Image (cartoon, rainbow over all chains, first blue to last red; front, side, top):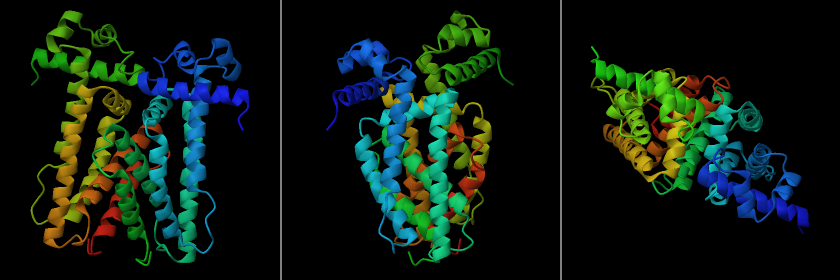
Length: 199
Length: 199
């Protein structure tokens, strides 16, 4: 059960997500967020030192959610190509969870390209994803399911780029494609390209 | 040779790109753009009805540049997988041409997710890219270089998603990877996944 304080924080975060999504980080004011959340400015600043801190907390929540979804424990004995295909499947969950909140994703990127604090907060987990994917692919090389000459660093970048690109297009043009299907097909193509075809 | 009027327009566009990149579309004012370009507001409005019109012209220039770069005439007799690999190579040129202007790319996406006019302006050429890629891949199926059971629509989406994701990451973390190398490797993996391995 949530404490009263956790409940207030959750309200403020939800209000901020909708304010940032609609108006953008710069235009959304603390007063606006408080109005939507039904809390006083005093309550706001009791929980979050600043609008930027709140923004960073939302971003970290979001990245932690993806992290735990993708790299949660799987049964042993599952080949790396299968595990990666399974991760592709989970992108559907990320899409659903993020639906309506996806303009926030744009805000993360825009602010990261302009503000060093945000940049550092987004870049550390992003580089960790990269390392986790590369390590997983390397494990595939070890187990013999991925070609020994595959460049695991490049393949990890390609998989993440694919996911980022799909997420971005999903924001801008959600109905242009079955994005979950595109994710599965794209991941399968990349995996086919680096496996012995024994998937 | 540029006429005086074309020169003024080019100055205004360059100033707007740097203003939008630095401050964002909303915060960058016409006065700011005029100051950077060294032109009067009268001159500005003589060339562009509004800040949004200027923004759309810049976006259309950018998309047209990519279009003509990627789909420019190639010698006949080149297989589709080779032509797509060559397109991957050209992404390097897009990166170079866009360097410093890349935050603009973010702005296009953010504005498109908020404004129907911008959305329509970005979505039409984007869907054209999708159709051009799918048609090219279908040609590969016809010529026998791409597997007959390949889903060309999905593969086209995957290639574009990869490119979009790489472009976005290049904006946010230009030094994290050799993005040109990632492009080539990612395109090669996808192509390997849908060809008979005869590239």
